[in-house]
Amino acid sequence: MKLTTATNVSVDGVMQGLGGPDEDRRGGFERGGWALPLFDNEAEAFLAEVYQRADAFLFGRRTYEIFAGYWGVRADSGPIAAALNTRPKYVASTTLTDPQWADTTVLSGDVAAAVGELKAKPGGELQVHGSGKLVRWLLDNHLVDEITLLTYPVVVGQGTRLFPDTGPDTALELVDSRATPRGVTIQVYRPTGRPQYAPATAD
Image (cartoon, rainbow, N blue to C red; front, side, top):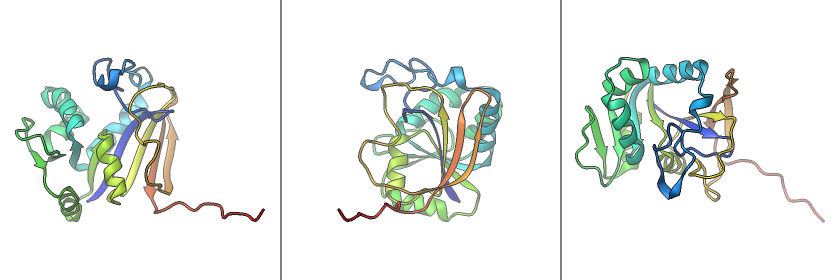
C-alpha cells in the first residue's frame, strides 16, 4: 500500500479545529469551524472519493479520538462514514490502550517498523487524515508517498499549523491541482527528496 495524507488547511497553514467551534480548543484556540462555510459539494465529493480509495487508515491519537467520537457513532452509510467504519484503523499512540472503535489496532512500539510492514502489504492506500504531528513525523522518516492538501481561502491567524516554523525541508512534485466553486484549492503532491537551492554567488 502507498501511504497518502489528506489535510485541510487554511492559507496560513492552520489545520486545528476546522470542523466546529469546540472541536479542538488546545492552546486557547477560539476560531474553530473555519472550514465548514467554505466546504462545498465539489470538495465533499472529492473527499468522499479519497476515502473510498482507502484500504486502511492511520491516525494520531488526538485525531483518532475526534474521528471516533464523530464518525464512529454515525448511523448513516455515506461514503466517508462507510469507509471509516468498515476498514481497518491503526493508531500511533503510547497512551491509548482500549480503543472502542471497531477494527482498531494500536501501534505503540516501533511505529516506523509497523508502518513499513503496513506499506508492504498489497493494496491501494494507507491513508492519514488530519493527525498533523503524525504527518510531520512520517515525512521526517520518509514514509509518505503522496500528500493531498485542501487549502481554504481564509487566514485563521492562530492555531496549530501543519508545518512548523523549523523542520526538515522537502521538495514536492505537483501531481494534480484543481479548485472548487467556493475557492478551496486541492493539490496533490509527491515528495521527491531535498529541495534544490540557488547556488551562492560571488560578491
